[in-house]
Structures are given as structure tokens and as C-alpha cells.
Image 1 (cartoon, rainbow, N blue to C red):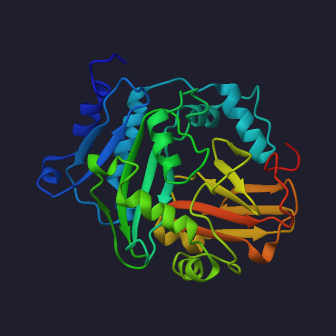
Image 2 (tube, rainbow, N blue to C red):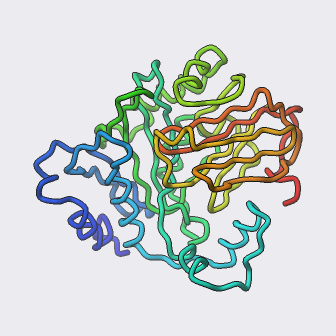
Length: 326
């Protein structure tokens, strides 16, 4: 990429392929692209289509096409090693159409920064990035990383170009995309302050209501909307990322075809030192954990299509890794 274009040349082509003439007559919404390179200008863009149904979210398809247009080869050994770490299945040296599809498929990782709760006016803010950032060896996005860290997600980093946007989700009937503009790209923006407040005030009472409304299971102790403050060890594979702080460990899955109505298709089994997560008939995680947890205080949530699991450690010692045998 050169320094003069603000976005890759293929960006306009992707935009035209998704935005039909009929869609341009709709109101639409604004969103922001933060390129990986500090030499490229941050851009406020407009999606010319109202999206009021998570099950018909063409914006997500648009972002996938954008990342696909950027190209970038996947490091096969890195990707397959990540799969081995998650599933225990060693695919090194194996070939076939399924492996080829795995290596070439492009999907979006959604990182929910602000959870839609009553206190936030049911407003949510999320970051969207290439889910194969590690396997593609993409460079860190310093501006996106810094902005999310300023909101309180200590140590959180992002790779490659990133989008950031806003939604309204009352956790019942209403869901739609809202404007996120250049004025929101600031450490002093209202949403940043809401994130800080949400994280500072996460407690059993406040988050218990959220657990019920968002489909969380098991007893609620504390939940964390994302990376917890003062995070120590963390990790990421092509299927999930995990992080910890104090007595909690959070695992966020990258399955990209989950929708708001799929809560009944999610099954999470908590053991003292084992976790199994299934969604829509697919086993996403089934492994022994690094150390014992308290199953009765574990929870899960599905919001904005993102499945997250929060575990409470049996002891407050730091975990050096997520899996017992890693």
C-alpha cells in the first residue's frame, strides 16, 4: 500500500459490490476505518443501507469482502498449530479441499468493547478485524490498540486494518446499527467513559440482569465485557482468544455464523478443570484447563453474534496458559 491512497484501491470496488442503488436511498449509518499503517489517514465512512436485523447483516459481509480484497497469505504452519492447540488434532502434512478452504476462507473477528446494557442505553461498540491476523502475520494496529487500551482493556492489541462501529441492542426485540463518526475516535468520547464505568461497576447485581437478558447460564458472580483490567497472560488462536485478571479468565470465540436467536443452539459444560463449548452442533472447545475453576460461578453470553465464556478461578494464581497440556 502506498502512502497517498487512504484505503486500498479495491475498497471502492468492494463498496459498490455490496451497496445496491436501492440501498443508497436508505438512511444508512457511519462507521470508521482505522488502517494498520500510521501513515494512512483514519476515515469516517458511510454505509448506505439501514441494518435493523442481525440475521440480515450485510455490513458484516461487506467487511469480509474488504479483508478478502486486501489479500495476504496465511502461514499454514501457524494456522494448523493453532488448530492443534485448540482441538488436539494434528493436521500438519495433510491436504484436501477442507484444508484448502480453511486456509483461504476470510471471516471477521468481532471484539465487543462496550456491552449493550441498561446503563449504557443499550448501546454497544465493537471492533471488527481480520480473524486470521496472526496466521497472516499482520502488523499490530497501534492506533486501534491504543484507543481500546485507553478504554481500560489493558494489553489488548489488534492486527491489520480495523473497523469500529456502534449498535443498539435492547437484548429483546430491537437491534440496529447506529452512527460511529470521527468525533467518537477520541479517548474523551462518551462511549469510552461508558466503557470505563461499565468495567468499574461490574458486579453481581448489575450484571445479573444482563446475564438473564443475554442468555447467560449458571449462577452469576462477576462478568467482564472484554479484556479485564491489569490483564496478565493472554493468548489467541484462529478460533478463540483468552485473557485473565485477578480471579477470572475469559474466552471469546470467533465462530462467525452465530446470531442473536441461536442461544438455544449453544451448549456450554463447565467442569472443575474442563470446559466444553458447542454451538449449532459444532464443538468449539473441549479440553482440560490450566488450573481448577469454580463451575457454579461460570457464565456465558451471546451478544452481537459473539460467544464469550467467563470462568472464575478456584485460586487467584496467574495462569501462564489456557490449556493444561499446551
